[in-house]
Length: 343
Image (cartoon, rainbow, N blue to C red):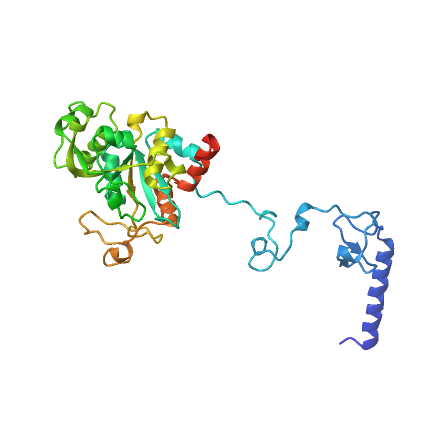
């Protein structure tokens, strides 16, 4: 074993050697900081740079202005994340600008149009009458109430012999929607608009209803081209359009006009979007005969799909199918900015 005196002598020798090394160490030239931004004491240990005051202040990096109080800028363990921006990015508008809606409609696509929450608070699938093919009619019928309406002008209704369903003074509809008598195309008219490809059957199928709508928008059509009653419901729009009445009826005719359609062809087709199984955000599937079961459920829950689609569900539906969504309010603003207000 070593004696106490030997241990003391060794400790003294080590301390003296350390002091001699410290005196021989070259002093840093940058104000007491080494190349890695730390200062040395005489014992050779590294101290944080903040303890020693540099002669030249460090430049302030923009990221140093971030606060650690923002949840979006903190990592789960409390350190500031440098990957997040320091400013709030504006969220994109949820609705499609009206000029883009016009372009899309003109190309034969569907459009979802929402009215005010204080009115019907519903979204309608809308398409130009001239663009309603049988397959598009099937899509429209499947995803809406199936009650297809064809908005048109009062002049067109008069030309085709479409009187009001009830006298105007007897109309008790909450929004005073101007229904006319229902119609189907005649067999001869169907062959005329399809160039002899097909005639009419009962009038209720997607193919028959698409043909009826095309007859309504055909400039050659006369009263005799339609049979009454039928399975398509014409609606008469107000002369002032959406600037006079902010309804889906006027929106359809207004959009047809903005798309450049002639007076006889300013006819649209609309159907109210209804809730579907899975409208809560969960995607579910089912066959037409109902034999396919929804994932995680014994059967589709139709109890939650009995109402109409509201704004959020309409936006979700539009994203799913790639359909633009707009509001009648935006359409009114666009028309007033382009053409002025109606006195």
